[in-house]
Image (cartoon, rainbow, N blue to C red; front, side):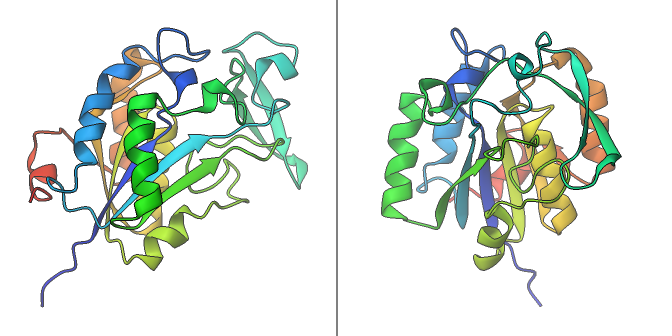
Amino acid sequence: MTTAYNPALIIVDIQEDFLPPNGSLAVNEGRTIIPKILDLLDLKKFNWKAIIATKDWHPSNHVSFASNNKQEPFTTKTFNHPTKGSEFTKEQVLWPDHCIQSTFGSAFPEEFAIVFNQMLKDQPIPVALVKKGSLQDREYYSCFQDCWGLHHTEAEQFLKDNKITHVFTVGIAYDYCVLNSSIDAADIGFKTVVIKDICKSVSPENLDVTEKIYREHGVAIALSDGEELAKLKI
């Protein structure tokens, strides 16, 4: 019996606030991966069965912003569970204000937006935009759910509805939202591959620790010129 192979691409948070030179939370060299992402969107080259692009989509009073906690960016704070209070807590990083809904910083860069938005309109294959982080009182790193596992986006159901078996992740940041989205995809049951050279990290100096976490959760790490993507080429 032939094993099903229905691959999907998830493009994580390619947004102006994460991109140099002017993004409020710019990731070093973030713009350099855009040409490779655009290449992946060429359906004459790659046989994707579905594509998701994600956006951080925060209200201005979001709990993850340092400015809303009277602390400096990149410090940490202990947060209570949204429904169970101090019974469960998480220590989390506080960030500069970023990706506030409907601002320039939340937008896709123009060269990506032109291509992706046309695909979203035309639906040559199933294509979805998934927004995360819209609830004020909790952090989201994964495109599947908030950090507490309470609120779930439409990403999982979209992939299941389209009978996806394999998920490939790219984008920003390799050590935060790509990481957590990849882990959740693997935990749900998708064979998951992160394309390392089409991602950028907030803290590239911690690469070994980041990649250990990927592997511990069953996520394969590949390169854009490797055999994993070669299987997808038409």
